[in-house]
Length: 422
View 1 (cartoon, rainbow, N blue to C red):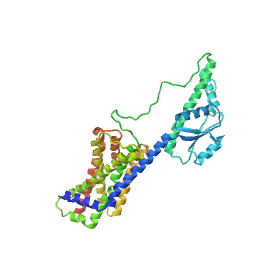
View 2: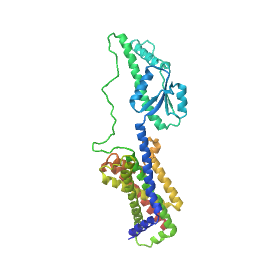
View 3: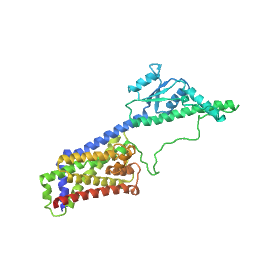
C-alpha cells in the first residue's frame, strides 16, 4: 500500500514539472548527438584528409627524396617542399610552424645522406678490422621535427610515432644501400642488397574480437552508452530536490502516518525514477539507431545480447536512483541537493572514463576511476555494445552496481531511522 502511494506520488510530482522532466531527455540527447557528430567528423577528416607537413630539404640528396616518396606513398601525409615556387628552408619552415600556419615541419640538414653513407663505411670497416675508427656522435645525421606549440600532446605523440617509424625505415634503407656498395667492392661479382619489394611479411590491422562478434567500433558505439549513463545519473537532481521539497512542505511527515515501513517509501520512490531512467535509456538508444544515420553517421548496433543490454541498463538505473536517494536524504536544502549531486556525478563521470578513456589517465586517477559506478556501468555497456559479451563476462560489473545500490539504499534507510530515533 505504502509502495503504491509512493510510486503514484513521485510520478505525479514528475509530471507537474514537464520542463524539468524534458531536460532529462532533451539535453542528453543533444549532447550525445553533437559530441558524436563532431567526433565522427574529426575521425573522417583525419582518415580522408592528408595532413600537410612542411619539409626543408637542405641536404638535397637521397634522404630527402626517399622521405618524400615514403610519405606520399603512406596516403596519410602530404609533404610541402616549396612556397610560391621557392624551395623551403629552415628559417621559413620554423616561422610558418611557429605561427600555426602548419602543424608540423621537417628539417633535413645539409650532408645528412653523406653522413649515413660514411657511417655505413665505418661500421663495415670496423667489422673487418676491430682497430678501425668507429663513428662518433658528430657523424650522426639529425633530422628535426618541428611542432606547432598549440598542437595537442596526444596528437603530437601519435604523429611523432608515425613520422619516426617512416624516417627510421628510410634511414635504414639508405644504410643498407651503402653497405651493399661497400660489400660489392670487397666481394667482386656480388649482387646488390635491396630492401625493395616483398620481404615476406605483411602488416594487417584488425580488432581483437571473437568470430561471432560482428559489431564494428565507431564513435556512435562509444558515445551513446557513455552519455546514456551520464544522463541516467543526472536523475539525482530532480530526485534529491523533490526529497528536500517533501521535507520543507511537510509531505514527508504526512507520509509517516501511512501504515508500513519506510522501506516501501524508498522502493516506491526508486521505482518511479527507475522508470524514468529506463525511458531515458530507450530514448538515447533510439537517437543512436534512428537519428545518427540521418546525419551520415553509422547507426547504433545493439548486437544480439538484448537481455544482457536491458539488465545492464536496469542495474545502472538502480545505482543512479540509489545515489539520488542518498543525496536527497543527506541534503538539507535544494541548493545542496542540486549542486552536490551534479558536481559529484560530473566528477564520477570524469574519473570513470565517460570523457577521457581510463587507460590514458595517470595511475592514481585510474585507480580512483575503478571505484566509480559510472565506470562499472560503462565497462558493462562496452562489453555489450563492442564485445558482444554475455553473462560470464558481465556479472562482475553487474555485481558491483547491485552492491552499490544496496549499500547506498541501506545507508539512506539507516540515516532516516537514526533521525526518527533522535
